[in-house]
Amino acid sequence: MPYNPVPHAVDPYALQQECIRLLTGIVPASGAVSYTVDGSKVVRYLTHAIHARQHQAYLDGLFEIDPMHPSKIMTTDIRVLKMNDLIPFQQRSASPFYSEFVRSWGIRDIVELYLRVDDQLVAGAAVLRTEALPEFSSAEVNQLRAAQRFMEFTAQQLLHTPQRQAFSRFCHEYALTAKEIQVLEHLAQGTANKVIASALDCSLATVKTHLQHIFRKLEVNSKAEIIALLYRTNH
Image (tube, rainbow, N blue to C red; front, side, top):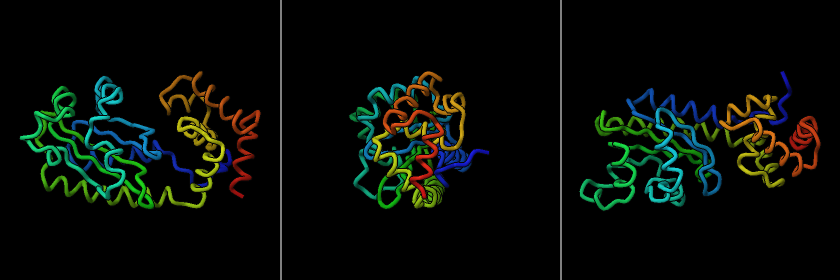
């Protein structure tokens, strides 16, 4: 097994997958999504039982009118939001998000959960119900609130470690992009390029392009040199 020079580095996708499993195991849902946040931007999405066209429509611009989008609650201490509480029935006809996205895709309700570390929003997740299921009840929202507390505690334990902070500083120092960081996290765990491509849902050529950019920024010529540089950073 290859030595990991970034001890306890978190696989964001594993964390996102577990969040989705937890939420969909607690309450019946038509679909779910989890994401991570970097600064003011959502940088990684992982969807479950959501139509690809629906998700793409959201990414193509509808997120800008989403009142529950992470960018809208950055400066608040909100942890859980229920769409049908945020947008009362009498106001829905006037809501662009409701008319252009929610109604178009037959969505009945959404509950969004936000995870914070050191008062900064770092991740989130949402469960949604289409018209085949009833609106989320107060009891179900309370169950999701309890899940949010557990998820946030877990995120705090995983992300707020000296090793993880050192890795974050390393990425910031070399001005790595969000995609390059994802590739580097996998590379640090000894993951093959083909597996990285599968995990990031991109082509092998794209992974190789990201690696070329990483080599250039770190001024190295091989993966072994990257591992050595990461090791020196953490020792």
